[in-house]
Length: 158
Image 1 (tube, rainbow, N blue to C red):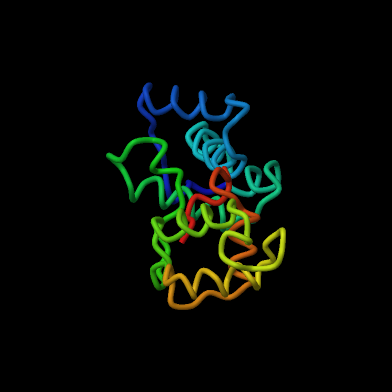
Image 2: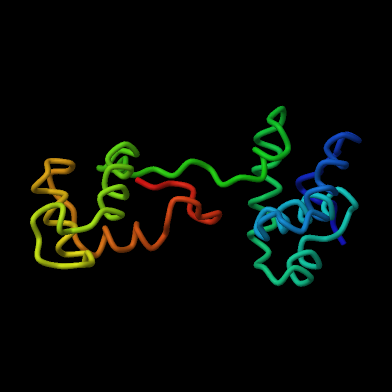
């Protein structure tokens, strides 16, 4: 057994926060898993054993230990979060989504359409016609409406 390359020395406050996260029933499981990794590494468990016990790959253990050490000084909860991803920003602003959702709650007959319920295609066409957005696909519109505005697993609506 060799000496671990990355060592973690938690403060009492960090250990308490991580333990609270692990015990919290409403916390997302990927955050709980990351907290368990950090706690077990600090206890001196080997990364292979941690990976096997948590049902993850060994490189995931190493990655989260590195990230924990790299973000020293940040609050515990932030250190367990995913990093910001690159990519283009959402083309539709939150304000536009609010207008689209509001329109989806209205009766299509208010817009002169001879239907009683919106389809994704008709709603997308009307949103464009009303000038809320320049373009939106019916499938994207449907996914966003299905996702809803209070999804705990999808924090971004754009």
